[in-house]
Length: 377
Image (cartoon, rainbow, N blue to C red):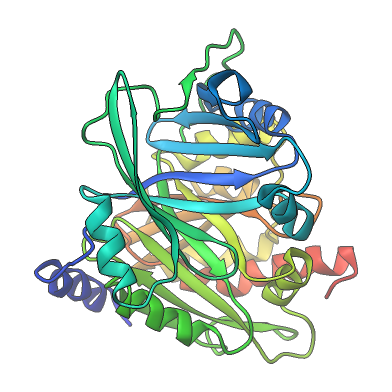
């Protein structure tokens, strides 16, 4: 599907959007130690302390630290006792994404519209209040143990939401230029991509704006299939991957094995200056996939002229691709957990609305090298 089709998909959906979304409100991770995880994300990614909830704020069974950089907000949550759903989630999956929270103007309507179309309820519409106003929440289940929360905060002026207090810290490393969530990718099981595509179409009113089959995303050893789902205005995009037959185990199969089920594979984060951002992230210890020099020998023949010098991109391992609207620069981290599951993508869009189809072969070969080193290919 070309970019013209992407644009028309957005346009056609705007007039009948029963679930208007204003973007990603936050991403919540269930982690084994939220205090240490918050320190890591501050140190390595340049987040700032924002809010805290725990026993001191009346939350007896868990602790949450909220960190922010520009419009990018992460919530890091850990359980305080056993026999706790959060503890069970971490035991099964390791550290990973639990909540993809979406900004809405009317959380009650979002819940009603999605549930009546077949969504499994996760949280009934709930109003949280304090002296700074109110936040309205509701939620539904999606693939695996992942959930979508609908967050309505138009009548709230507090730091994050009721139940949280401002988290002041003397340790606030400088930012790295991370701006907002560009997209979040989910890995689902064999033959489950199309059912979840139908879920996003029928339950949430999304459109399938791009599709990739195993001819697009394959190497000598492995393959996968992917479809990109987008809401009406294009602010929220969820690519969905499933394995495809190959000689050896694909990256999606490896993820499903180690995550023990379906879940969020990676979060793609936007930047306005990928060279500056990635250089800073590398200096702080974030490791990225290694791209062979041969990729850069022909990349400009494929993508044409770009504004950036090629040498710094090659030194960092940044990939380049172009569509009819412009080009993009992207790079993928190695997994941030001991399990080979969650990783991050850093992306800079120079007009392009696509997802780097021209980079798939180089990317997947890089992933396979890492799999092989782990003995999982």
